Length: 133
Image (cartoon, rainbow, N blue to C red):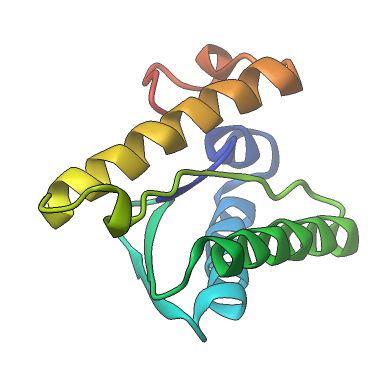
């Protein structure tokens, strides 16, 4: 599960065209980094799910590439691109449904998002009334 960080802040500070560009550019980074190992789906305004066919080491490398791709985009465009993500491996959930695995990934993603806001010092309540943004 992947969710863009601070999209509302981007929309409020730079306009919805900039926010739309961030959504599209994030999708491009996701596709560039993960398409060889799986499928990507946009499941909400700024939320994506990627279903990978990879082992842990490959997944770690793909995530590292994704972080580097976002950093490169940010440097090139002078605007921050950041996303929180959470991973869950089917092998760690034997016999569980895809929904249970997705829920585990979603919980990890929201924990990462919370850490992002703590680390960055941003107050997400300033830009959103939804605590999950």
